[in-house]
Length: 216
Image 1 (cartoon, one colour):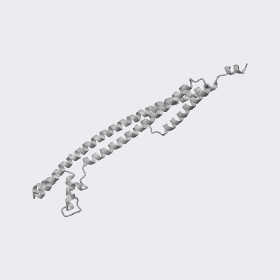
Image 2 (tube, helix red, strand yellow):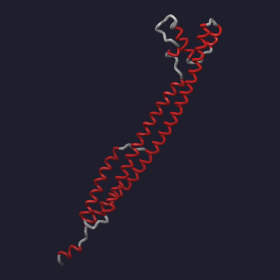
Image 3 (cartoon, helix red, strand yellow):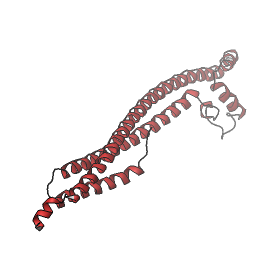
Image 4 (tube, rainbow, N blue to C red):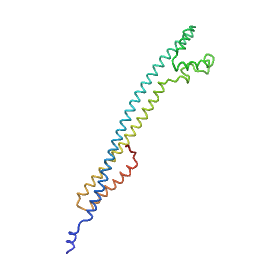
């Protein structure tokens, strides 16, 4: 039998190995493609939840701030009426107003009066400058605003992770493309080049995937 006849009789083992490598590579890539798409979806959902929580916190912050402003307006008015009663010598009205001061104005005024503000130049000018004058609503507004900021930052971080997983999905889809095309190429060298290119992209994308945070 001639050499040419022998070569035709022997199977192309190189093509068989190339096809086996391509099938294994594409099978694993298919699983990782589904995983990255799942993670991109999870991070997108987490982003939406965080943005909604940030929006709700901002609404709460505005509500608490408005409540604090209304409280301040009422208490400033009461304090002004008390000062006027004191100045006009109406002790009965002044005592009545002071006894009915709401918190935190009552505590702040008592602490302020203990400092003898009329004779003590270092004392605050009004009880509103005292550390005892702490409005609960104002503190709640600050906390709600901080929560909104935190949730916004978390949403942006989740968006970044979702985008990263989307890029990996595209890279794994590229691996599938090269793997599929390699099986349609007749020339052995060209087929191996395509498989090799797919393998390089697969290894690079998989290495990056390991470093990414995951949601379950």
